[in-house]
Length: 312
Image 1: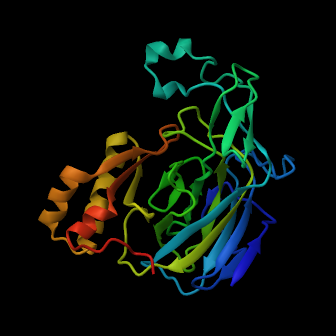
Image 2 (image 1 turned 60 degrees about the horizontal axis):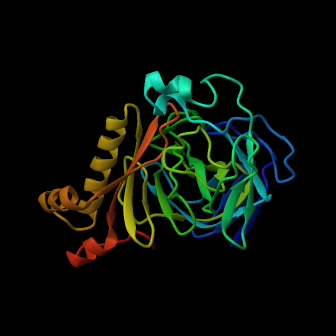
């Protein structure tokens, strides 16, 4: 079944909030999301800023210990412009270089506006605070996940085992993301859409805009997982969220090793294959928890007679 969900309330935490919509296994939902500052498709602020989430959406039949699969089928901008901050975060440069940044950390920073041209698949800044910059249009989801256990509410400023503000640029159309279920129904939230964003969200923003995300929600045929996983046409991914950065890398590497064992590799073969073939990407390095993705090409798994997909 196809659903269209327009929230009546938004949340700046991911947790056990009252269910807004319940769907069945395999249903598809188009979800309207405001931007990171709570502005809607008319660019009117309708809720408080801070990555307001649309949701929660409950999936019938999933219980704690299960895994929910979120397949991103499309990301459509709800307006033809977005915004970013025209600087870099102070924590991504050398301490002695902070004074060379366009705006000092903690200062009031004006927005740089961008326009998207879906025909040419480009996004161009208006050049208010410098020369016009044009980059490829590559929409992605900055913040999404499921409710954690024991009534905890996770701020949408950060991320953890249940997802959250990971800002990983490959969470886009065609990607299926797997989250560990901690409460009945999983309680899925999504928001913080970007028209484009580089690795790390090193300026503190992508090009922020209101979006409509169409997702398919299913119960994954997968053993219990510890950290988010994902797959697309080319890669299997495992994602770790923590600070310092090496701890996020450790979480992601451990999760991918477990994933390859589920693909049919023994522990040694998985380790040897990973040591020569994994790739690492940086998700968010601006927020309280950093994000690292550890990934491996599916073709290598097929070459070794291993399972290469968990999509039903």
